[in-house]
Image (cartoon, rainbow over all chains, first blue to last red; front, side):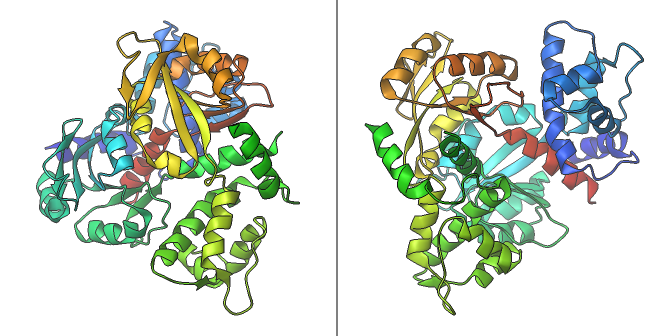
Length: 224
Length: 224
């Protein structure tokens, strides 16, 4: 049922001339959204591209151009209407529709992600976790049950889950990715520093939290 | 004492002609490290830049150039010695030295980070967490105690903590950043989508996990 719902929503949201949105634009948009949501909480009704640009410390033409991808248009002199800005951006970024995902690797990082209730506010619900460690199987983290990896395929088919999250140790990441692809996963969110190789029709998003630490340490110890 | 230790280590590690390493290089290095650590576990002794390049799907001259920043040099025909590769890169990326950090915002994301034991393997130890919610103060997550934010300044000075992690709701991020700067923090790891403004000598690293979701959703629903 969920698949049907989002398939129809998708048509409304994504049948736009702009298809593949450039990644830098997608990186800025959650910050636009966050800023305008703050204004919304403060009771403001309109926001100009200039004001967003000042907040972001970028040029206002960049803001206008980015937002044109969403179909949003501002009114002369007053700018964008705050409420519709929030709902259009949430739809556009896929945050307003819940997608289900399975997570493989219920170790420290995996359990941390299971704990994070914030993900569902951004449209991702982790439905189940998988591991091979018998002591973990059958237990729950934040009400999400941990199953044996052997049950992944069947459960993914039953529940129409197409997003897989990898939080295993890096050396097992490729194996898990291969299995996920064989089991019908269409998009992989890879939290390991390993580079995984998958067929070209599979979406991969790499998020190495620790990589950010290397950048932070380097800046910290070189700027003194 | 910790400050003295890392100040002296820093001299060994960072007194190199290459100072500010470009961010794209720093983004690739944890993947090099992860790959070579896997080889190390498999008992391999040498790795060539060509082999790393194939794994990364980039040009081998790029690999050689990136690694030249670290002072590592390969031997003709055999390549880099695996053990020294791992230790040099771990030192270079700051993963082998533990830095202490304070986290502000013991909500869902904050507690998820507190849970993640993996961070300390990458050189970051969260020493204490802070919040304003009285029901949380005095409790512990993964043995890390949650204190009232009012204790931040004194504790940071006592423990020489210079890294602050922000996991509050986005609308409070700027306030927390301002306080952290006033309280002597030198580097801020910002997990909120808010853009924080700080004096130019303060290091900021933004990590919006949810931003990666927007990119993943966009790829998933546009590639069909």
